[in-house]
Image 1 (cartoon, protein in one colour):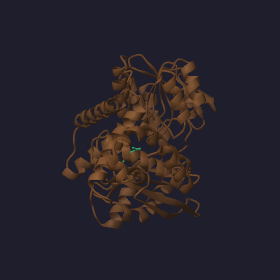
Image 2 (tube, rainbow, N blue to C red):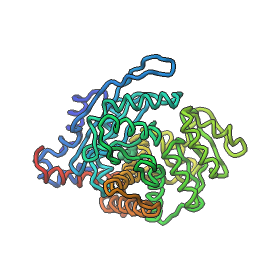
Image 3 (cartoon, helix red, strand yellow):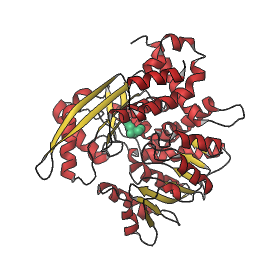
Image 4 (cartoon, rainbow, N blue to C red):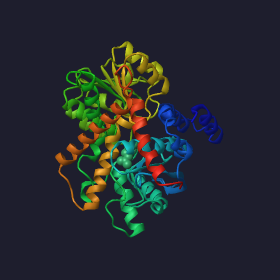
Length: 447
Ligand code: GLU
């Protein structure tokens, strides 16, 4: 395999699909050396097959807003790879959603899911529907209209969607209600991230953030450090940031910043439980403004418009919002302010130049597909509980999540340890995920 040749071919075939091409390039660069030691992969054209989704469903979603006006959006489900299990991955509702974005997310999901140790293939879906400013009734009508098309593509042994940006417990509830109505099948396991009254798992809402902090704990331990007393800048204030704030605080760190599209809130004394609870109110308001935190807690949080979380002095940066949210300039600013670790929690949250800057300048870095895998891993645990028709206790789920995150860290160390003893977590995560999926494809023939 020659990465340059494959990228030239893919860029010509999928022009303008920037995020998808970026994700492919990152993974292919990491695996090139290992891949070329396996002629059987080359013979079965594993790389050429693994970069293309198995199939993509595209559909029109038409619904009526509160003013009685007809609205039309586009809906998608990208079923990327089913070599190790049924398709699994979230749904993203955001105005910037395109096929390229969902292809990059489905591609990343394939390797992330392989790292979880659970049998789940990779998928992603969503819509360019913008939840900002929408009423609860509009959200419900949109979810129902979206499921009117999606239901035929999914099923408990086929494809199991969940939440992502813009899709949380409320949306999963509305989607699940409509699925049951249409399919007349009352499985509890068609979607994950469900409410506790209809088959949800304890800790699923917290799982991405909790898992990220468990991973960070193991990464710091390996580097001879720990979380106690460290300052953390978190970007975003949604579900993932919320879970990260809870666990970071519990483990003795101080979250000194959260952010939103409107700016950053600096919290010099560290985020409190009351403030963390308020993040849920901010999310369900659909206003998408972090300034609301400073308005509610003026003594504790200072809002600056137009600034990112990376402008706040911290030991550890946790991007928890959106792809490419941390640029090379942000990485330089963080480093200049004393930051020495960045664990990417959002999918592809750091631009490639930022990752190279961190790696060249001694900032510990781990990629999203390893750090944020606790979310989908706990979805996998939800599927197990659904299949067995039972519910595990919070401790049982938490212990399993922690064990999975520890195992993901170990896989990164196994495949990413360099000649000088340091760990390249990007390489480690990509190679570990790839080897599992590639092996499964190889053993199942040319399909
Ligand atoms: N959207 C989450 C992710 O990026 C969770 C997916 C799931 O639970 O299926 O991994």
